[in-house]
Length: 134
Picture (tube, rainbow, N blue to C red):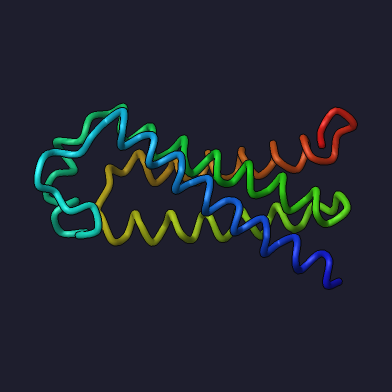
């Protein structure tokens, strides 16, 4: 039981690290406008219409990679049990939901977040439990 709990926690931590890294790369490719404080939700809400589509897609990719990577870590550390990947997906979806709530995003991003998180969770579970996986 402790191993599985540790696996879930490690998966969540790995997912968060992956999201931060992927979003950092996204910010390098699509830099925010000069003078915008990325830690200020009000400033981000004010410029949401100016943010290019590619930057929005980069955020979705980051959330998907975090869910997938964290899920794979969780499943691998648990001895290939599937539930740590579900824990990672739930936490990633909750964190994305908080971001979507704090900073108004286009409606399509809300739906895409749910789809990408769910798909990444299923993919992580399949990959990690397959013989070709880790």
